[in-house]
Amino acid sequence: MNLIFAAFASLDGYREGSNANLGRRVYDRCLVVALASARRCNPDCDVALVTNTAPPEPFARQLAEAGVQVLLCPFSRYRFEADLAWSLAYYKLCALRYLLDTADYDHLAMLDADTYTQRPFGDIWREADEAVLLYQVPHPASQEMAARISETYNALYPPRDGRPRTLTHFGGEFVAGSAARLRAFLEVCDEVFDRMQATGVRSPDGDEAILAAAAYRCQQQGRPVRAANCYVFRFWLGARFYYVSTNYRLDPLCVLHLPGSAKTRQLAVLYTYYTRHGCFPPDRRVWRLCCLPAARPPLLRSLAVRLRARLGF
Image (cartoon, rainbow, N blue to C red):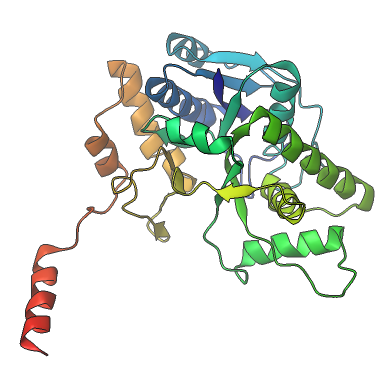
């Protein structure tokens, strides 16, 4: 049996991200969408919310009606100072540790709250036997956040040869693997966390700093970690930062990650639709709601280019 789950913690004074907290209600709506859509596409899998406090109504009822379990797990591990950016995001690692210690599943996949599942996970489970799967954020080494993650690692593990290490930036929105591979991976995450506690080194980049460090160390030890970008993609739908792809349809993804303003826009609309109709809209309607570009080139521009190529100018 396989498990798909999301983890969410609520603690007074702790931070959801790097900006002001959005509040519990916003995340409860997103969790219904994330887990109900995952359950719809994967009826042969268990789907669960792992949380340190039970969701309020009507969200608890909506999750139960969708066939989603609610598992209570205290935030007892991976806790940093409350005012640290993304201090609540570390709960995802705590939840993963709890499941590996208390449940018996062949494979597990952890999703962020702000996701929408559109396809079954069959290929994910097959590949999860071979490696831990993480979303590789498409950031070059010099990008601000990616550079900080490398700096954090070098502060934790000063290179003996004097050459700073450059890490791959892996995101925290998706973690999957067999139970055995995830246990080995989480042991390295534990080691990184313990070193952060011992040295006082902190990162403003949340669990992604630990995941990236653990992935780097696993790869150095010959333990495979693979990019899961053929299964999940981070779509930024803001007016100022619009970063999308046509992979929602071409070699289609399993999971659309919709961070930022989509939590209070696209995911809020999907929640309303789901609670009114008892189902999600057709894929094409979801794609239009997310303002995703057509999965084909512009017709007139393409014809103009073909004409110019044929005429030689």
